[in-house]
Length: 161
Length: 423
Ligand code: FES
Ligand SMILES: [Fe+2]
View 1 (cartoon, rainbow over the protein chains, first blue to last red):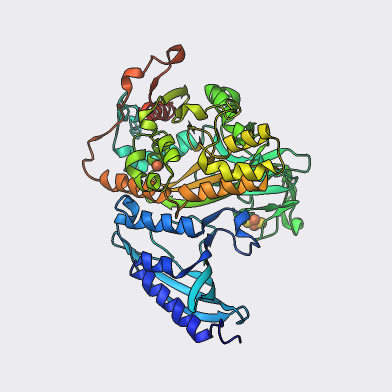
View 2 (view 1 turned 180 degrees about the horizontal axis):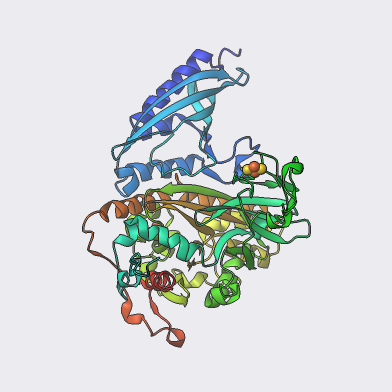
């Protein structure tokens, strides 16, 4: 492993747990800082697609869209986002899926429970996360959230996965 | 049997609809919902697919007509069939995948096999059936099918008027809508599917409701550049809503985007300048302008009673699940064979507003959910539909036409509801 730019498995797990905590606390501006400028945040409808840019997704966000998305969720102008959903998520079952040379690729399971309008709902998903070091700091280069229910109707989600 | 057998009282559905309002029970009475399935969804033309869903022989999709599951497929001769997804033996669904290609449908329970046109081809162990077992009586039940401009409709009703007449004045608007192919055929390009806990007619109304846009979609408007934001400030503009007959209506929000094939000399909006530059590498300026003008979709919504809308840049399909549960599909459209950059731009625009995580749809869905919750209060109150009512009778040829935020389209839909529910 390249000592200077490499990311260990343990470092990756710590990063992903910290990100999950940031999202449950809805600290969205902190979340924006976890990203590399060229990072892509993707929530697909279909799995096993080579290039998500060529198909319709739920979310296909570059840095500009991520900023706009956070602005929407934190403004008081979205009725869906102001009816706050409490989320509690657990990320585990980490597997290393790529080489560790210039970064690391991890697959993990995410169990998210949402509570809104006196109802619980579960939003289970597989996460594929690619991390890279930028000036010493670990940044997210790619996060693909593959929902178990991706192909079927889901109710609106006004928070980040 | 005595002739004094009491008749079950037939509810007076007509009394629930006035010219300018409808009764709240239309949102939450399960008996009304059950009657709607019979009197509307099993009597009229219901949209089931677009021809680009099933371009090749054998291609199929599964969907619903009202609450009944159906298969829409293309046989080896290219003919389109809509078949009930129910085995004629003991009712199992014969197809459980949402789309695919099949030479035949074999029921997984006891193995009855059906041809692409639904005919029963054979059954395992036929010898224990009697001689009068007639396969020709036991094909998958086929619905009547017709299409217009690639839109495929089906109906259970052999007496329904021809599709052409049913669509009537909506047809020229459908033709205009399809110009967003930018010179290429329009093709479906993936879809967002979501549901909300509310009645289907809340969504039917919403497609022809410009009034909510600046309120509900404030956070979407904030995310636009100033040119696009001006374009979406249509409540200040010259748009209008027009009743097209048979429950259909059109809401024109951006009159300058009615005919995407015209006015190609208009300046290219800033947000599409990079796309235009990219297209110029391989296309003539006139083609670039036509494609770019089409890329953002049209400036109007056509609401087709009861389940389809051709809405700016996508198809909106609603499916009633129960009186207080509705599934919505927002089907993205692409230019079939068109430039990759233009099609990707269309997909990104769709993701921006639509779907359960878009910048627009979750807020719409939240409003609809509140309508359903609020309708539990004041059960004798009415849903008010009187915006722009003074325009009724004053549109072209005496049609009903109001300003862009008029509730003319909703009144049109409910008058058709009344006609069908009291027939
Ligand atoms: S239910 Fe289909 S073969 Fe028996
Ligand atoms: Fe809306």
